[in-house]
Amino acid sequence: MSDRISVAQGQWRLAYIWLAGAAISLVLLLTQTMGQKFGDQYDKAWSWFLTTVVPILTLMIGALVYQARSGDDATVDRRMFLLSAALSSFYLVLVFGVLISTAFTSAPLERMTQAQLWLSPTHALTSSALGAFFVSKKDS
Image (cartoon, rainbow, N blue to C red):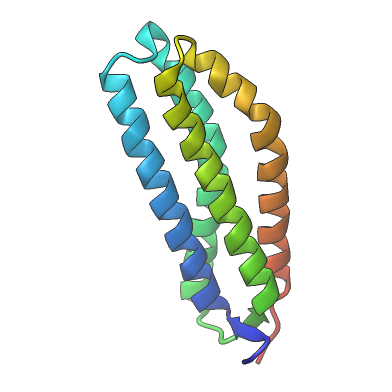
């Protein structure tokens, strides 16, 4: 087994993880909003969600566009890809878990604020792994 994979392959796999995770959480949040779970403070719930997933989604889309335009055949370290994929999946499961847990509390916005205690460091680790993945690029 090679210790490197193509940049494009790794980026697309990470994008699938992020797009699927964000879409599932988005549907849940939309359902909760329509069900009045957040009352008239739905904007705070959406602000929480958007700041939680949009920065990395923006990175993903930007990287995919750049890769498509450059067309290079560079490779990246497979271990950095696996670490990035694992941390991304874990982070997105935590985000989804927070949204699920709000269904079982009368103070959902407090739960979301409290979740930042563990989401923020996990987001930082995930972002760092993704950054390392992108800089491990090497021309073939």
